[in-house]
Image (tube, rainbow, N blue to C red; front, top):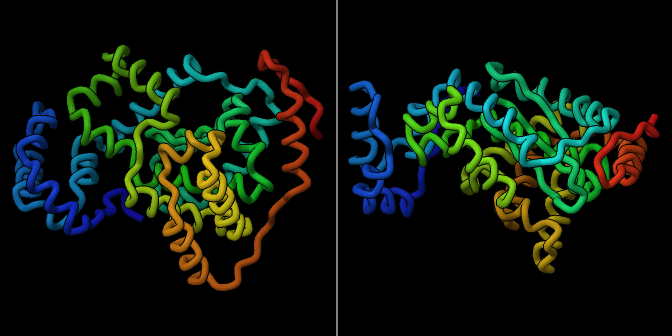
Amino acid sequence: MSDKCWLIPKESEIMKISENRDSVFRRFDWGGLCGAKFAAILVIVLAGCATGGLTRLAGDLFVPPEQEIKLGQQFAAEIPKEYKICTDEVIQAYVRDVGTQIATAASKDRSDVTYTFTVIDDPEQVNAFAVPGGYIYVFTGLMLFAENEAELASVLGHEAGHIVGRHSANQLGARIGLSLVSSVALGQNPTLLQQIVASMATTGSVLKFSRDDEREADSLGLKYTIQGGYDPNAMVSFMQRLHKKSGAGDSEVAAFLSTHPLTSERIGNLQVEMAKYGKTKGTLNEKAFKRIQEQIKALPKDGSATSTAK
């Protein structure tokens, strides 16, 4: 899959962009654009974005892949200042191993980044997120909420889908513009970086993803789950439980759903996607996962490491 996988906006979205052309022009930072890039954006905005999503196009132009990687490195250095990274190497190694299965599949679609997987020690937060450049984070609260390794793998697959689709980079590029993205990527704007990461600690993600972003990440995540050797039904079962808890007003899943809008339509779309793959068998790996869950439950409140899992 190419980095430049254009999303075709719905008619209502085209009209919205057309009606707000002036605000779009004011919001973007046009400084530093070469003539060709400026012309491309100008044509798209004036035409109502008839041939591609404005956010996706602006993101690709404002944040080329090499700059996205530098941006991700800045995020990765700042995140431990806002979140408590799990210090238990057994838990970290387990997630890296699961993530490797997903990354091997995702790399077939996007090989210019190194996929890294890190556990954040917060048993109260059912969440996971990806930042530009291949960095994926999962909370211990989500690992406790999941019922098996395949469900965890499906979440990592979904986040890998966001990286392959360059969703965070595209959103940042479109929203804050070339100059600010460049300054953060080069380490020249630590204040803005701190503000973005601090906001992540509150909202649970870099930015709230669109329905198109979620749809693409779901489709890619399902593919990576299957190619990683896991039971694809786990992705649906995980989302169904999230949806049920959200309907009951459960605050435990609020952070995840605030940045990953979950609807019955998304679940239905996944079931249709699964049917295309036919009868696909895969592992759940419940026993190993339950051992890791016990390891998480045994973590001291101060976050120091334990080594009871085998």
